[in-house]
Amino acid sequence: MQIKKFFERLFNWELWDFYVLYAPLSPMWFWYCMRSKAVWFFTPSNPKITFGGFEGEGKKEMYDLLPAEIVPQTIYIQPGIPFEEVLKAIARSGLQYPFVVKPDVGMKGILFRIIEDEAQLKRYHERIPVEYLIQAKVDYPVEVSVFYYRYPWEEKGVVSGFIHKELLQVRGDGKRTLKEHILAHPRARYRFEEMEKKHGHRFDRVIPEGEIFYLSFAGNHNRGARFTNLHDLIDDNLVRVFDKISKETEFYYGRYDIKTQSIEDLKQGRNFMILEYNGSGAEPNHIYDCNMSLWQAYKTILHHWRVLYQISKYNARNGHPYWPYKKGRDFLRAAKKHFRRLEKFE
Image: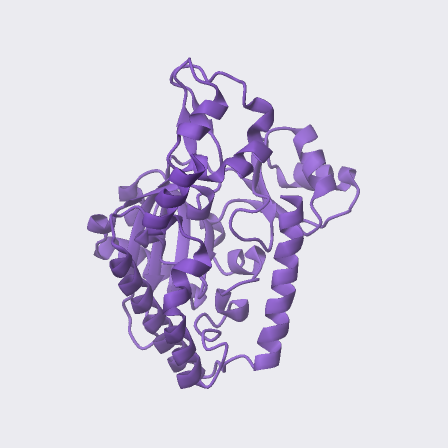
């Protein structure tokens, strides 16, 4: 079985480690650093977001830039405060169970949870070592990602990627246990250690026929979510929606993660919520699950890097300078230390 998994990973680039996948492209990234004469050449790409949104930015600073009506109701909780204070904050806000909790500064779905009751919240609060947010759970049925960019000298932007997300899940057959479902799942079986940590206490449970059991609520590729390419549905209406949002926030490059009632509603600018958006560090995740060859994926990534370089260069020349090396180095070190801390509690 282990040998089989090894060869499946070897010949399926979508299963490769991030650093292995991107290593052949790294000379181009360094070339942009040299041309810009700045290690952090991407920092002016999104001037209103710390570090250009590459890594380590807080969700609060990004939510605060957006119109309140398209952001889920959110409150922020400091770690270590008395739990009674948390309950008072929830009562004042009017938030109701179930709701979402996640670190204000997070990545890859680490410590993202759906909280069903007070006991779960208490365990989470006692465990998490950093500031976190409590957010209304958005029940719109369709979850999508939109990769958007706009050259600052142009009025109209580009939606370069549009995908539908399906959370990592299994459907019961009334016969197999959860463990057997996971071992048979084309994605979950490669995440067995993570699945055992999260769901090991339920491994012997037989999943009733037709029941959907969610293995992860994070809609990230690195958390096993399945993507479906919606590129054929990109049109001027969709672009107009994100032009309007992005001009208000001076957001030039990155990816929006959204829940909506329907694709048509999203195109009309109604019945949708922005769960998160990621700036210069956003991966064009429409390369996954779209039958792309490795070379097509590389071409797509390189195109987006070139766009990022051009936007950043223009903004640097127009009042938004590159971050100095030491400032960026110190910020990145602090961010990585923060994420290592989170991983210990995951």
